[in-house]
Length: 355
Ligand SMILES: Cc1ncc(C[n+]2csc(CCOP(=O)(O)OP(=O)(O)O)c2C)c(N)n1
Image (cartoon, rainbow, N blue to C red):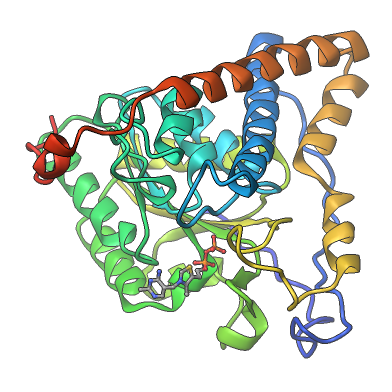
């Protein structure tokens, strides 16, 4: 076991969502800086881009330009950006339907993501997948999966393929804490440790599966500790701190690449928006959301960068202006992209084997 998971405060244990109680998490000190300025600013830029991109998604959804389901990642950006920033370009990412930010972080352009949400031919899945099925084999982003936990055994299989082919690639698999109650999670962890697979399982514990709080759905709520049943290395990380996420993932990548061993990371995070755009969120209080917004991942990282003299107010304004332009460009591209040709209905159904 690489490190003992942090025990969660029990103060809210008997205070499920829907009651007046606010879910509590222990306060965490900010991470230390061990990176060069360019890397840090790139990470900051990406977090701001994903936040503004998704704010625009909410707007476009309300305008009826995006249809179907749409699950926003706002509040959780540090998890995807921090973890993916530690990967090599040829490493794999598989994730759930809450994946717009992770797709951008892995290298799919904001234009191709937005066009996919609009159901347009210029989308990364050619307009036939929509919000929950972003996919681009060119950047080794293998979905966007709508079945809760469905990506966990698939990622285990991708890691098996890398090991079998001796490529030293690593697979990152993101999923929510509600997926942990499924058999597929446990079967995958068992196989990954038994066969020593280079797979990193990242549970984004945002404390709610749709409208059901963790307290109401999980008998033992320490997700990282579940790895012990399979003798897997595990770690519980402050998912609101992008640098802590990056460092925890770097440790797991080293273990995966050098020893071909899996890791379970529990990222303690929070989503500010409803489960999807159609969720009014009546199961939790405004006070609870505001409490977590005080530890907003972009706020925390801004403070760290400013305190260390690496970012000024004018740098931030410049980044915000660049991001605004990037998001507007994505919207223009999505608006102008054509709808998929009906002739394409039966294409892209079966995939060729990945390289
Ligand atoms: C196998 C399966 N069961 C149920 C659903 C319906 N469903 C969609 S999302 C969701 C909750 C998932 O919560 P979590 O895994 O914590 O991820 P989060 O939405 O918080 O990111 C459920 C039950 C589904 N899509 N797939």
